[in-house]
Length: 285
Ligand code: PDD
Image (cartoon, rainbow, N blue to C red):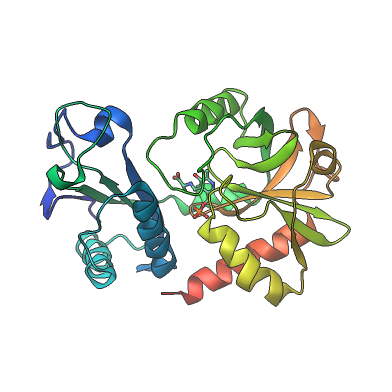
């Protein structure tokens, strides 16, 4: 097993100094990224990640230089050459390199692409199944959270506050409405019904969220309602969970100082978690 890093068309040594100090990703966080899970030696839901990547690039006005087939092939090569069967692939594309100036001239910039593959510790992911703690924080992000931009300052500040309080992550509230987590989506269960924030510009449309909505919840016979849930609703939920590519469905058993439900991962959450794991093992292009 070998961690691999790819930059602009070639594999490079880990730690190699290849990024220009004038890279707009480095100066401005001016770029987009994706994180895809490798399960059983295959990328899970890669076409969904690609669709979101291209959408982010369109919305950020970054030209696309690679076809979906080329990208898929590159992901496959990374898995094959690294021999990593359980891990993740990080991909980022910045707008390009130019002397620092806020405005950009598309015609003078060539997007810069970085990719790497790393193994994941499955025991850590399995341990999330026992339930995690979450804290609540205000959502202080911009109005285009559906773009998977490299510019993550409010997210990292929120996540750091959460981890300092020994929480897995933070649940964010905008105008008293729960939007999502600092780096995951959020679901609540009340009286057997599943709730999550509608997929608009104020959240990242997580691929895991999409899997829950379109495959996992229907196959488990669980009704999902996309609606704006206020703080009171979230605090009184029977069950709460995060979803993200790395951890899947992550039960929340403590919210700030309160216990969620009976303080144990809830039955609906665990059914969805197990069902998602099955879908991931079966694989999806
Ligand atoms: N984070 N919301 C935010 C703000 C996120 O950063 C993420 C993912 C999600 C979940 O999306 P998905 O199910 O597609 O992973 C929701 C990734 C994993 C990250 O930044 O590393």
